[in-house]
Image 1 (tube, rainbow, N blue to C red):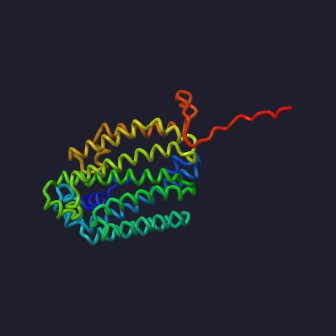
Image 2: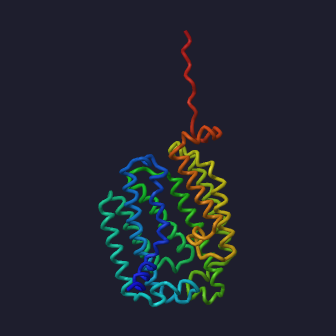
Length: 318
């Protein structure tokens, strides 16, 4: 019984729920970040997407268990190792998806549509998209964009277009980095093809170019968000976190080039410099957004492009 319970927990991958922090993006960066109702709604939305993403992980293990058995680390997943049967994994996936959609139906219709779209997108990915090079990573990135959109729909606020584009390009960067990790960890071309057919279409040089492009665009769009006149006033101060953002992206690129990590989550949890940088960015971001009156007196006054200065009024001549 204990072994089966451990296998079920491993199947739903609670460690991967960290990806659903995007469900708090609209709350953190939006105008309702101190509204108790919005905070509760964001927590509930996070829980819903944890159920939906776990349903997707269970489905992924079910569909890929034969290929996972050939991977040096994924062979230990519950279905690939035989700890759970494919039928049990399928039942758990259906139950989690049904429960997630049932709770999502209590939210605004836009949120439910996005949640359902997330499941449909992942169904397409598991049966078609993952076999198409480049498209496989793009679909994964779209999944994170849907999380960001759902975060805004859950609390009914607008979200910056630059923030959505930044999310998309950042997730492309992370996705291509994961492919680079897989390529480095497997090494042998025949084993790579057996594990994931699309890996034979990726080369270290191609992935390095894609990482450079998407990482650069992610930094630029982050800066554009901080300079966007439509962003909440406190968000403009996030420009001061740019060195941390740049270091995190460069550090991620360096770590995956060494081939010592399996992907973004592994790097976040186990690479201390990257983890410390991420925690510093989160702490500084929270301080800049929620306590700007404490920090702003110590910051230089910047002039933001696109924000028109108000000309002083002049008394009419007598």
